[in-house]
Image 1: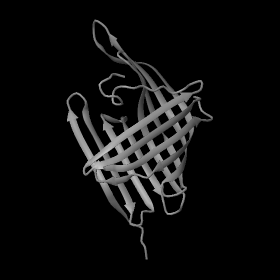
Image 2 (image 1 turned 180 degrees about the vertical axis):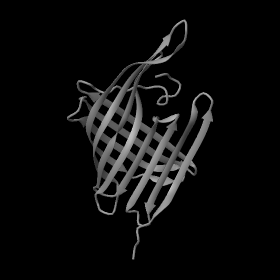
Image 3 (image 1 turned 90 degrees about the vertical axis):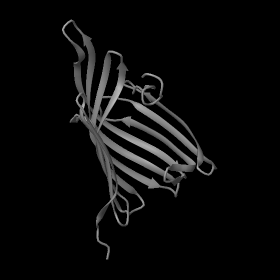
Image 4 (image 1 turned 90 degrees about the horizontal axis):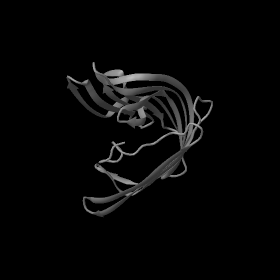
Length: 230
């Protein structure tokens, strides 16, 4: 008789300390049961304190055709960045997900996400006495978001990553009963061609657009495009 028992799938972590920034670290841990019916995942990115860190914890219920998921999260985003001005957005909330496979390679995902967005605006101030970042405004927003995504994935993986196949994600999400109104569409196409042993050619095409009275803003540069500022 089967007895429910969780075991560790993998754990990855790194940590550091500096006199300027204090403690920082990243941990990712995954658990599942022997039949793969229950899957737990925890990720945290610690920086100085819990309020300044990112956190994600999820659970997936997988024994039926429809997969159900539940997640708690805290994210940070920077909708606007200039040399002396930063708009910081802290997102806390929950995410309820359902995934329905049409076949082995094609599936539909639907999600509901109630969240609280805490917005802060910081400006870099220079005076004769001192200089540094100073908060100048703070406000919060209640957000309730619906998202729908169609995913195709027939990639074949080895230990280093996918070596052949195609992955496509077409997604839309919008706010309802929220303090902010926007509608966003996202497209991501990735293709992998195995050339010879140990060599794979990878290509990606992605785009995103947002509409509505409070449309989201997207920036290139920084970590997204190397060699360019935001």
